[in-house]
Image (cartoon, rainbow, N blue to C red):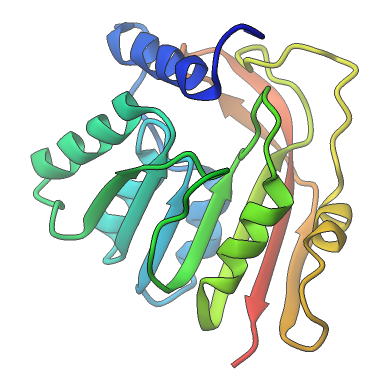
Length: 211
């Protein structure tokens, strides 16, 4: 893996998943479904859209979604699925290495679901840029792994997991301009892409831009 570039790693992963018949269709991440269901539809940004479950769920529920990923296969798959469901008027799929480029626009919701990578990534800077792209009243939802599932690409049991409070502090958002709406670590029963189940912990951070 060390010899690969980040885009090669993720492209290989999603190409394999797209070809593997045992991998189930993408589902919406449950915390996103829980939080977005309470919000009026608007413009959303899906950071690291992967196989498209979150993007398509948002589009089905009236959101206009910009879906971004570093892997061309992931981006092409999301665009194709949106066309199949006749949601392509609500979905724009773009290929970005977020360490180098960021999608244009302003958003009512930015979703970063399991925005982890085995490569060096200026994650705090990217999430801060995402927060700054929010409209007044918009929300940044960050859901991180708080445990390792059997299907995770990372099986290093010594991996440290930052708490939601630590993640919020690392963002260093200007005081008074942001409201912390949620910071917790719920546990849930999850099903992986190959159908296996396990109890996992999520680290959930939700902040709202004032206005």
